[in-house]
Length: 119
Image (cartoon, rainbow, N blue to C red; front, side, top):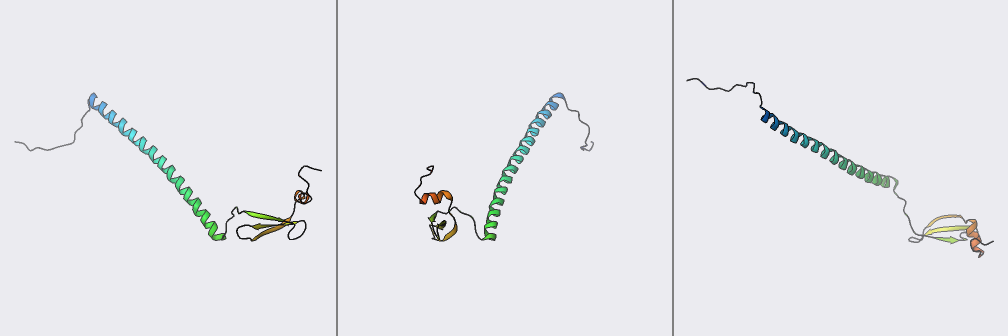
């Protein structure tokens, strides 16, 4: 009796096998396309998250380096202080002087009791 062995030899697929291979190829091709689309979507999501984090880091770095930030603070305007024709702006929360500046013509007219639009 002879000895058994295996050897790779050419095998030709029949039509049914070719059809099944084509269906498997179509399914796996769709999986590849879906994965690439998912990768692109997730990469875009991660890129947006990184950009947001970098903006926060940049803002914090600027605040630390400069030691301040600009904020809207409620202030009061004191007319005719420190002298006539000038006005002083002070912070309400700390009573700190913000600046002195010249009064506008409209502000000066208001001191005489003229309503806006009157001549």
